[in-house]
Image 1 (cartoon, rainbow, N blue to C red):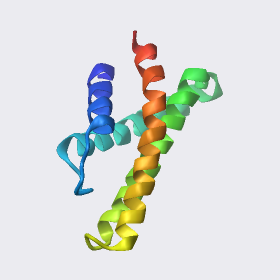
Image 2 (cartoon, one colour):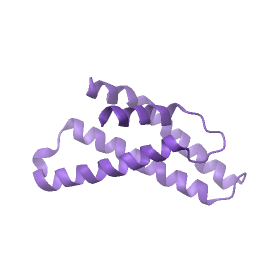
Image 3 (cartoon, rainbow, N blue to C red):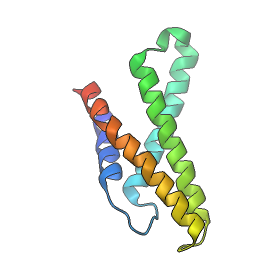
Length: 112
């Protein structure tokens, strides 16, 4: 599952979408993130504070950035195309993607 998640992550982060609409890869990535968040919450509930470590906190930070990026994308898509508000939110979402690109190398190293 981690390899599939990282392949979706890499494709969604590195793809260029000039229209600003959600594509299939990005939608699947957000579904994987939602599933991972529920899995992390269940593990934290069962194991408690003993489950928290550097890798877990790092992954949770990346999940938080992805959730924020998703929320920003949804706000941008709520505005009509071509408006100034939509452009601003799309630019903000792209800035979050730039931050995720810098973290991408760390994610691949955790797998291998």
